[in-house]
Amino acid sequence: MLNDLALGVKYFIKGFTLLSHRQLRPYVIIPLIINVLLFISMIFCAKHYFGSFVDWIDGYLPTWLHFINWLLWGIFISVFYLVIVYSFVIFANIIGSPFNSFLAEKTELLVKFNCKVEDGGWRDFIKDLPRTLRREVRKLLYYIPLLLIFLILFIIPVIHIFAGFLWFLFSAWMLAIQYIDYPFDNHKVAFAQMKVMLSQRRLLCLSFGSLSLLASLIPILNFVVMPASVIGATIMWQTEFS
Image (cartoon, rainbow, N blue to C red; front, top):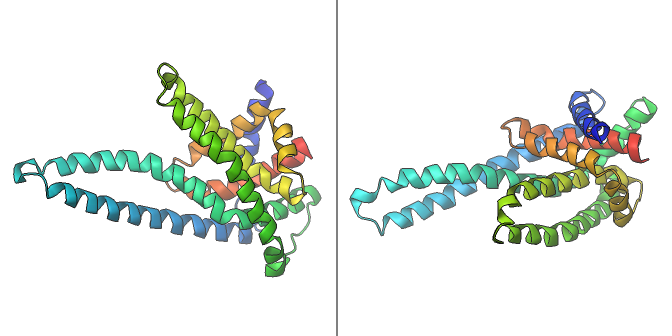
């Protein structure tokens, strides 16, 4: 049990140590650019629409109550960070999935064979694109029903006390699945079979996923969590599941 928890930490750290490896660097750049552009876009959209909402509120308030603007912005900034970061993780993984699949493939070649990573170019990338996108749809079909169930827990008396902790575990589990699925999918392992295999090492996956989730909440670091987690999960797959 403790061994699996420690292994999850080990593979997560390993992903960061290989992040700047010269052989993998070209495959990290595009996911990194996607993350930065997506996060900036979400910030500007949220600020624009919330600003319009505050202006609408102002139209119904007397002048002496306009100090509420500062209160609303304070609430917005607090809630925004958690909601946007969580949404960012979801959308970044969906948009970056084809590149992450490519990165997982190159990571495996580098670690397993310790050889120069050959670039198959855009032809290989485009060839694998339909399969990668189908797999993302499959993950969403697994994720969305569970998401709704866990959201309902927040409104059930007594259970809602533990809902936050359960939500954290659920999010960590989903992130572990998200990242380790790339090497599984590259080797044509069915999603259902992968879930069975991961459930047998649940603590390992939760340990890895928890660190990915926590790191995604840290500014700047959240831009590189995705490629680092893909690299770490690929090494974890190769050592523990292949």
